[in-house]
Image: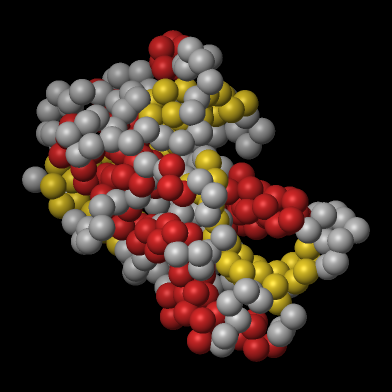
Length: 357
């Protein structure tokens, strides 16, 4: 374990639910998991309390690239990076490529950021492998590159601020497997993991399938698609029409949000239940209202904040944890009243912000 990780290591067990914080309170220390060695797929998970810098030494120019901001999840990440840039006192520009089919556009936008003088780049990647050449070129210019949320396979990255979507998928699958163990009546699940080829999607898919293996859960052929609401709604409608025996709809947060309306319109409440493998404000509200069973929370706001802190630490030569993400915990109808919402989701009514000057 590095000195930074020893400094941040928990002295006792980490609470599973983040503390409730007022707007005036610091967001840190935050319960997190670091991976040692960094970037290793089979690395050891180490519990830490993440503590960022108090302020940057100068107003660095940081460029942030997102796949899109069409759903509340990426709005949450946007809120995290913007608020941390303001807290640390750095400049920031945010670009979004408008969807998971737009890899060339994301690459072009990042190239433009670098040409415009970005000191560091934070990337929510459209593709697990597709930005590796670009990352190599940017890193060769001594510009830190931070991988946030989605994951990239590049070995030229400076740091990663993300959670294991394998674990997110696994926790969702385990929920079903425990409800329907081997020997019980078989149940069918429509599974909607997200856009094909994205690293986070493939990881979540593997975790979900591993968790249900050997149980009475039968997973239909995965239906991949962009995380736009219309796309996911259409996929859910198609699966429910073709497979009237479906007992569960499980997938992205956008899938879960869209599925609520489909289930309600078709009068399937109590016959088709819904699960998401990550949290958004819409999923949170769906759980509160009893329309969604539950979802793991990956605290996307905090992932965004940590990525900004990692970028500033790299620029200033400060020690940093190179591979870290907030601790995952499951929110369901039994514990949602105890959850500190503001620790894991952006404020209600937050709109995209594209720059901090």
